[in-house]
Image 1 (cartoon, rainbow, N blue to C red):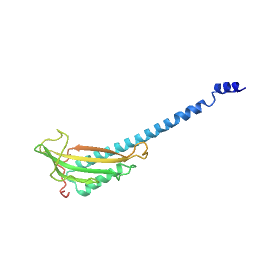
Image 2 (tube, rainbow, N blue to C red; image 1 turned 120 degrees about the vertical axis):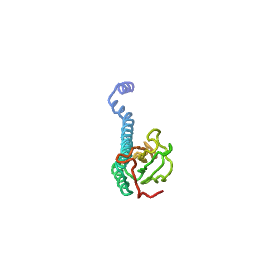
Image 3 (cartoon, rainbow, N blue to C red; image 1 turned 90 degrees about the horizontal axis):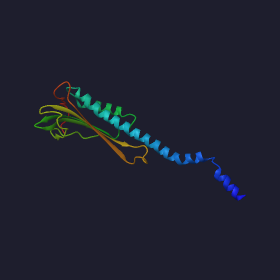
Image 4 (cartoon, rainbow, N blue to C red; image 1 turned 135 degrees about the vertical axis):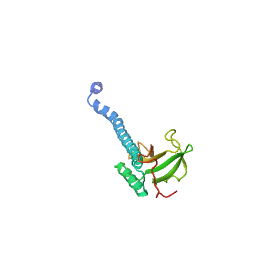
Length: 180
């Protein structure tokens, strides 16, 4: 009798699917959560890159800007980041002119990031401008904090720089920007 019970239980295949599902489900759920978090981080990075290009583009379209204009442009950057929090979004825009082979800062404004010192040298990629030419440089960083800290512990810092030539004049001026 005992032998027939063992034979009957080993031949019974009911519940095999439930056991397989119980083994695979945690892996599939973790994979799904990981992909969701990856997509959120990727979206935050793309929005931050869009902020960087938008700041440079809007400043490069002006012949003259004021600190209030630049602050308004930075505020637009905050709106682009929605629905992500903007507490860790740092923006800086600078106008640089190539002088004797060195990119020199004409003026700089920052939000969450200190502006560059007027007259200081700045490293830019080679061959963007020649002596006497000007460039608008937008620098944006964003610290992405994962909602699922068990998947991505700590902060992930995204950074992007954009380099654009002024469009309406040889140099975008900001005469009322305070010297730093």
